[in-house]
Amino acid sequence: MLFNSLSFLVFFGLVFSLYLLIRPWPARKALLLVASYVFYAAWNPPYVLILAFSTALDWWLARRIWKEDRPAYRRALLVVSLVANLSLLGFFKYGAFALTNAQWLLSLLGVQYMPPHWDIVLPVGISFYTFASLSYTIDVYRREIDADTTLPDYALFVAFFPHLVAGPIVRARALLPQIARPVPITGEQVGWGLTLTMLGLACKSALADGVLAPVADELFRSPATQSGIDAIAGIFAFAGQIYFDFGGYSLCAVGLALCFGFAFPDNFRFPYAARGFSDFWRRWHMSLSTWLRDYLYIPLGGNRRGEWVSCRNLALTMLLGGLWHGASWTFVAWGALHACFLIIERLARKCWAVSLNSRVGECVLTAVTFICVCLAWIPFRAPDAGAALSVLKATSNPWHGASPAAMMALAVMGISIAWQWRMRDSSLEAAASRLPVPLRALAAVVCMMAIFLASGGDDRAFIYFQF
Image (cartoon, rainbow, N blue to C red; front, side, top):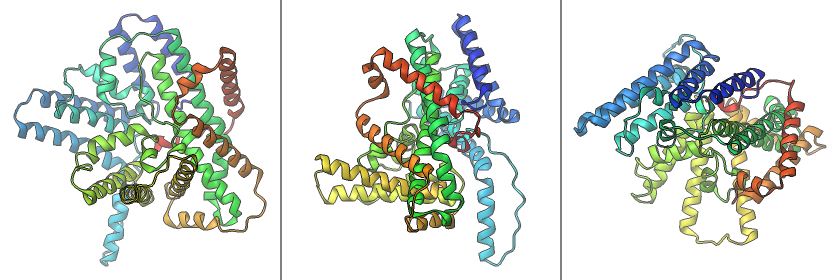
């Protein structure tokens, strides 16, 4: 059930109407919990059992950890949670990857091994709800939050449909207090939530799917046939596609949650206006980058044990962050590239105290960051290393006339980067508040028209649903 589908529109309209009619807070929460499980069951009903099992296990383990005073037992219970969750994630997401690489390693030793055919479907959103649930048990173990929540409340935290299948990765400490007591709903909240949802759907349907995806798909399908300018347009187009696709989804998630009175954290903050790679990761998929920072980078030692250990921790964090995105060496390569970018930036700032506060310096740093990020998107999108090299090689093809679609993609990306540069120190809500009411209404109409005009084509799933 896609956010940009008619079935979801009917689903949301029914759930929201019932939510407004029901007054008791426990009944409202029960409605949202049932609706969230129905929403997840629409993808693959049997996989609801995995979600329920993971939820019940972590809730029970967290309560045991919370009540336990003996350090060794508390640590053992946390290990059970980590092993159970990561084993489920590893089996479904990385099982085929492990078999393929085992076959390759054995062939190097002269052993002919034919693994069984792996036809197990990946449960949608398992990476997201696994990380959300793990944050709860880890925070309880650290005694940063209490494990006094009820099982229905915890189940709603994990399964709440706006963030269930593709984030943001909402922390228990942020959402459970909102679930525990009634949250007020105002007309202003609902209006802004619907506005964010419409904007997100317009970004997804009109920009990501309508303008940018065809250009990116053509490049990665047949890079040898593309002119140099078309190849560059295709690389930039995928950078825009994944931003408007996932950024659009995140806007929908934040907006839909706000309609029910819940506040989600922002997941994107104009990342293509980043001045440096550390700044980029403070702006791109922020719920994941902060999760990796708090539960992986800092426990490894962070930057507290010297420069080289800090670089090692950065590398491990980004490599595992790349692997989290998918069971492929191309995702590991993407993580490795970002690890290199971050380490080089870190060492450069240590060795050369160069001031980049001037307008020219900021422009240069932003341009370098954007170009490197776009180059790193090549292995992220390519099915294998050979395809990634072919795409990179296509940029050296003769620069004869670009296709109209490529020129449109370049224009959209140019406008997008200029807009992000203008907005990098602001927010959508702040910008909207400065607009007169007629202009806000016009923006909403434009979004609705864009969604309508983009409908009727291919119903593409959101890119991050596969993760």
